[in-house]
Length: 374
Ligand code: F6P
Image 1 (cartoon, rainbow, N blue to C red):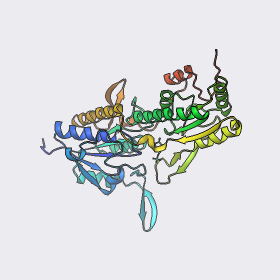
Image 2: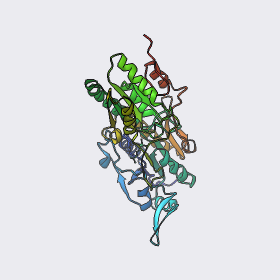
Image 3: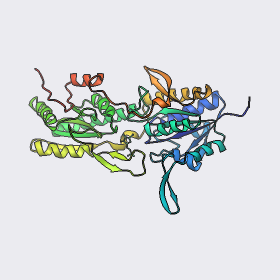
Image 4: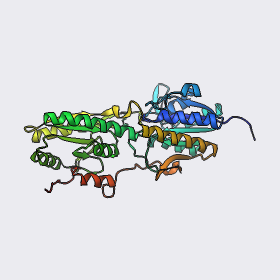
């Protein structure tokens, strides 16, 4: 057996999420102190792997980062090395440059590549695994839309931020008898809106999985007016849509593997509501945007990320390559990367417990009129 120290490489891909640094911190500490491995981190996601831009990860340069949002390795949601933009003879072309990445890993003597990412990043992780690279995935995204894990790190922090914002918006909405339409992230999944909306006592929650009708939203506002509740808080997921309608697109990021950036629904809904009840209420949109991904990581996400990081180190030791660490029924475990990608975890409106809880609370999803029995 060779007595060469195992060399582990890390990269963080996709949109950042609170908890990335906590995973980097725990994995680095565990790999060095428990297993005596050497670590490097590729910078800016897969781009760093392609151009061989990396830094050593040591106890010294990772100290004090557990609580910090963002990624000390930086991140990018544009660089799919299996379909990468390169310029050849002055012309932009897209090609598979993954062999360059594999060669770089070989050149550096990397034994295992740990990839922290969401759906897009882990799809490439799976593809590198198919090419024979020893890969371990760690599930990241504020959207919580990854299959095969109960929860991704970053989600809890985002929900906390939404909840705090709703608390603040309540007091100002109430003093001015206003309707405030709060747009939250989540792509095509309504997890942030549903959890944040319930925790923050929203009156109306609009999610992609339940198409809404404007008249049901108006009816709920009027029902509150009739009870003397002259303000209303609406949480709308960026991917929500009217029945028979389409999503609201903010921009198309051409180079990105997932080029559609959702956004703008809060403004749209505000205009629509103004047309109907603007005479009775002032209506204001608030877009929480990237505040949901920034700042400090919540205690829950710090602990979850530490658990993921510690277990990923054990997976390296046990050579459980081609898998992603996950949380199942409260237990840390792992699943094949093949089972993780290709499908989004969405809310099932018929069976999801929190949808039922919200309805019991009188929350409207805009899909049907809500009547209050006295
Ligand atoms: O996937 C995380 C996420 O924050 C989504 O909720 C949102 O739709 C998207 O990323 C925003 O991407 P960007 O940072 O490129 O604007």
